[in-house]
Image (cartoon, rainbow, N blue to C red; front, side):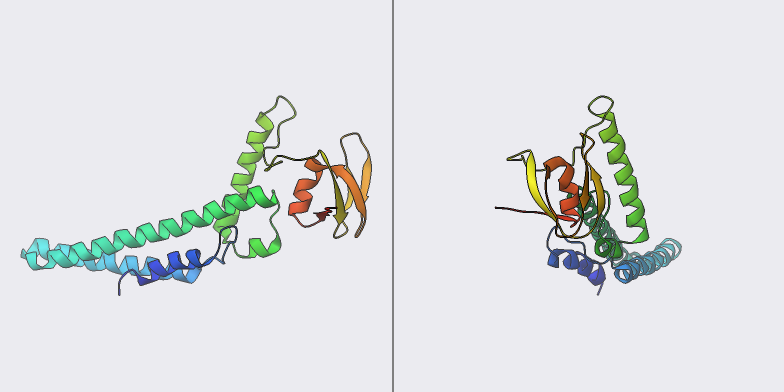
Length: 196
């Protein structure tokens, strides 16, 4: 039946909750595009036959296939757009470095789009706040305090704070650090917030 594979792409996204990125269904997208190509070629042949032989009985099937083409186009567009929205949200959640398991589920074109989006966002943030820029991805929720207690989950190396102090982030070490300096490291899984 027409459009089944396109609708399956949409259902696949609906089954996965927000904030998660399913693997890119390259086979499904390819099958939908092949179906669209076959529908277009069928329509083209019928249109030529209708013009040359004045066969009006082919018009309903031409319209049906054309509607299927448009529906497939909308479904593939919605599938790709929803994936881009999810990838954009992941940039705000994880920062400029995505975890390997998330990158694994992205196509090459999505990785390229993510890189371009990341550069555009960085350029925008540099243009804000005078010469120093402003990181708009920090403090997604208003902080209750400016400093937080964190525990290092894995070795990361040295972290320099604004006053020039170097803090060595070794596994299982605990530190009292500025919140804004830790948020990206917490999202990346390097630090965890210790709640008393």
